[in-house]
Image (cartoon, rainbow, N blue to C red; front, side):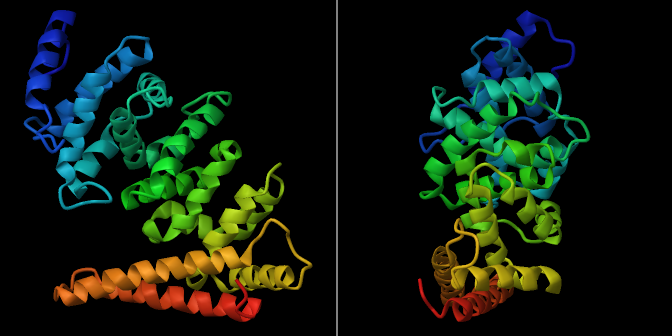
Length: 321
């Protein structure tokens, strides 16, 4: 499917061919029969039309599904070669961004929004670490709210949705422009902080600048950012440098004595860490029972770190939850 310099008639033929090639199976999966480069061009073209007011939901959903057909065996992402392909594709062009924004409102089909938010996760570094803004300031709050509506509603049921939400949130938090527009309830995605790879560049940046970010959140008109970011710092406590750890523990001691920030809930953080300990212990037990070693050592290290984080916070609070 060579898509360069096609006329409207050619695009109609391409649509018909794509609809046949990308039709989902009974189980909802899509068999990919084209190159990722051509699928991305097809998606780009129809997002442009969608952003101009035309209805191409079906074509956009099929192309997005074809991209994610590559993700078999990669529940929290795509194979490295395809990620590199997406990374080289200009996903920050105004026409592409406008098209993505146009399909995010809650009145659009669930599957369509699901696929598009998956793509936003994969291209989040391009979007939220761009040297120039990809949206107007007045467009950002609505975009963030639409993300929050979908991700928060679905996060309790799907671990990969938790991964998407917290991945996007860390990328937004790294950006001085985007962090100002994060929807208040979207901050709660930090409860799933351990779902994202701690070696990710945006995560490392945020942890290295944790105190600066705490100060930023103290200036927000609501307490949600401060509440959930501080909780994330306890989940990552073992990865913080000594200065940040000391500050995080000092804040906890002040709160425990009743002299600290009223928006913080130390019992909530103990519960979240405890839930992660339980989840990861179950994953470790399953791998051991199946004699699987891939990823086992990493999970065991993560479990040890979380248990130590819980012990530290528990000592400060006196074990009260």
